[in-house]
Length: 231
Image (cartoon, rainbow, N blue to C red):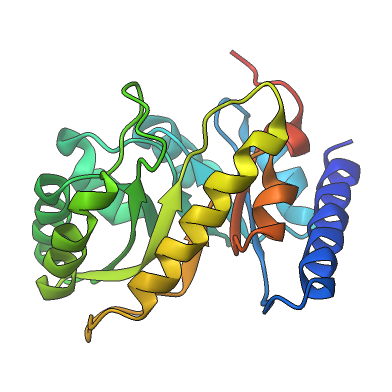
């Protein structure tokens, strides 16, 4: 079932990419992040054996146990909120952290990475919908955070991340994704000499096809691959 679901999601991503191309919009490869939060190591192995190369975890502590027992070569992404007291563990495990949401956290990640001789790839999470219950940098604060990231020697800024509201009508996400894509293009045009703005992470199980149509090149899908979470 996991393999079948995984291949269905890949097919949906390919179809969404073609729809974007048919509109004449520039397209590029889209990376699927298999979100393994609340799913066990055996489910992760099944997905990886079906072809998944990137896994996403929300919590550092849960990821740590899996990281130590997975016995598979895979790229690890942290997609959930990162608490300052978990920064050292996160930097030791994750290849890409999507959820940098403040200058304070940015500095903490840089310090932790310097201690182990690592340059940590990061994305800046933007709260474009201004949802009070969600983390993320407000768009008017974004430039200052981006410039700070570009100055720090042990973080490598790779792009932006968005978590869209959970609208009843999924089509309501489209204008927000479009706005985020425009913001991403503006950031690419900024003078950030130490950064490589390559990734736009947006879209989850309910809305990833729309996100791809509107320019996402990292999508985060959990339930669509693994089924309901195991609590």
